Length: 125
Image (cartoon, rainbow, N blue to C red; front, top):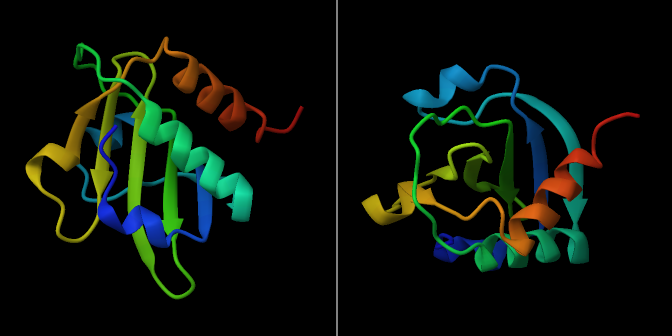
């Protein structure tokens, strides 16, 4: 997946459990409940997994269940919502090109399965 150039400045990732997936069909930002905060190595590992996500064919439902917000020490850098059903991702952030905003990923790839496992591990038992 093509990440914004600002991903190199990321110090913290807020993992978001999306509670109203239909809202994201045309929204201007990511909405949901904070499930976890990942810092340091954990944040960098997550970004590496996201960068490794191979492209795929999009099926267009886009009802995302998970998302992230990336931050540096002072600002929010970007947000990504992931739909593991239709293989779609939507990215919000300043100065993003059209190619960045709407992307597809192979939700069955090892990187995607590991990312989804990490997201699910944020939920209470």
